[in-house]
Image (tube, rainbow, N blue to C red; front, side, top):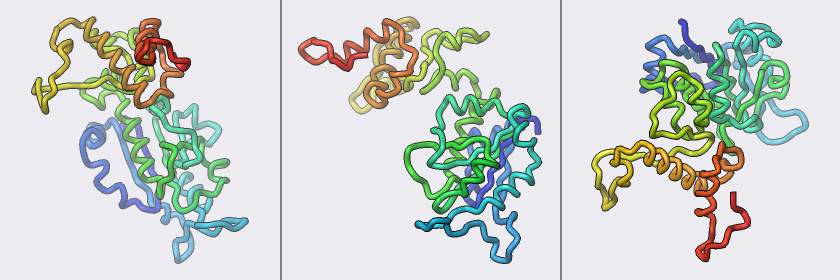
Length: 281
């Protein structure tokens, strides 16, 4: 296999049956751009009950995944020594609610690796020594708690592999979408994409429309049928700003905003009387 490889370590390998057999993931695997192997953590236990968890020291609710099976499972994969993994483009990730939040930027960073190992937590958590001695990083897919890391592993894999060259029919699809890069980063490459499309620069994507032109009493915005790429580009940028302000205003703090963007946002934030809001961008 020439492409990127994911190894998933879990106590429920059957969870992934079917997940990687559809759509883009299936095609990437078939084309040799992606390799996925799921490993049963219980295969790395040595007692007759195949024990992977135990009670937490200090008391408390639930059970904790033991460090030995996870460490042995990672060792079985014959990765580079922990201190040399970055140079070998390998990484071991512990999926945990206590981890750094996974984002599109993190996915782009991860897409540079040749091999990624995902450790799926379960029960009350994972022995912290796994994080300190085995894993290279700890990731969370959001500010909520799942029953285990399996769903998180599928999310991380899907978000990352679609950024690999050749996985999508048009590689620019990963640039001109929510949380995408800014225009100056895109235009520094040989293919800058459609002239009617703005790079997201950390914003949410603009609204999309297709045929029929009228549906449910609503018509497609006239500007999209105008053929004027500059007007379409401006409209799409303003709609992205409007949607981001409405649904994820926190993203505006770190977004790449032009003077025109800020001026448009101020018109959205001004109260009906016309005075500026004190929270204006």
